[in-house]
Image (cartoon, rainbow, N blue to C red; front, side, top):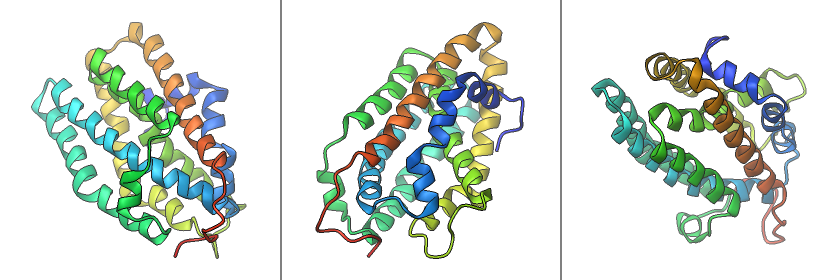
Length: 234
């Protein structure tokens, strides 16, 4: 995770209660407790698959917005990892929850998915690389913070929790390394293209993205249960 006092920490602090509502949303707490309805998680998995398409587009846009080869390479690595690695892992994970790739592709985007992904892409298109990555930060860095908090909480159920793999993935070394790299990149971008005069706008965008992420959790909770599905992965 980024060091305390960096741009991400400042942005999260500026979001105040909105950040806590996101990182400690009932969806997250129920997931950690192992009590989240399976239908809610399946809804989340479907929309997360559709989100990844736009996440990849955002990193393609980051390549275009980058001004230095080092920035281009970092964005290109993330784009390639999303397309060549993360998508495959997500499809395999969804398959264990009874969701085929065809079913994922055939699913419509929820309004919450549209709202968040288009907001991120709009900030990238109308702003610079710092604007784009600040809008992505609640997702990339927020997941690492959420998983770390839940795994450190004695109330989190480990044995027999069908969502343990999700928690371990986002609290694991590989994802923590990715989040730390993103935190350092935010600090560099702010030093090179920022200054305190930009902070209020970045904080406002971060807060909007945080609320949209919270709506993404809530979308899962609001999903109607499917009587044809079981309570866990197949």
